[in-house]
Image (cartoon, rainbow over all chains, first blue to last red; front, side, top):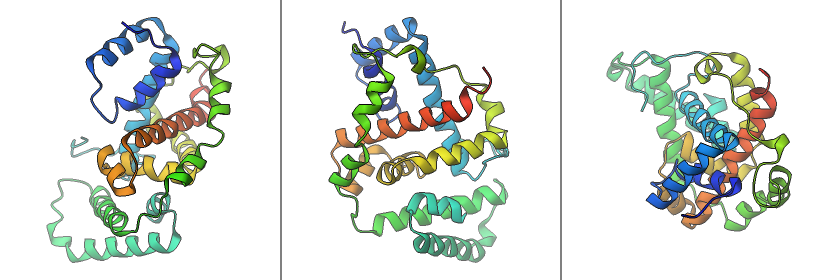
Length: 72
Length: 176
């Protein structure tokens, strides 16, 4: 199993939002996350950015507005 | 609405055009508004479609060279973040951000968020907005802009990294 450094992990954290990663990458990512708080935070932050963009695209900036519950 | 269109299209005239088209379309189709969503959400969905149409019809103005120029200071930026072996420098290690739900309810978060979006280099921003704002699949972005798959992924990666860096500085560390 290839050990990834943090820089490589940030690349995969972005790519997993756009395509399904090969299983080797997913395992390597999971292993790294168990050992590295910085990268776990990084991944969570990308999740926040995605959620925020979704909210923003729905015109919901500054107010929580999700009454129809259809957030994809 | 103008602000949304402007952020995506980076062209004030085109932005005004799509907003006008969206409002007209909303008025014409007012009867089909089913109250399943809020009016605001509905109108923005129309606006989004208009922006997508506009981008699809626009010539391929983005050249690969302009995208690579966008990343001119990239290597230097990475050097600032990582030590030689590619691990986080202590001072640049990503922090634990405040609770996302609470953040998105705060106007301060959105103020910082908009500033950070504005700061993305123009072409990088265009690709990122197509992905995250308009909801294109990355393959579709590559095709539309004539980019290779790996270029697309690199640009999206840079956009996200810049954005999180900006958010962390402007907002994420406030709670510490």
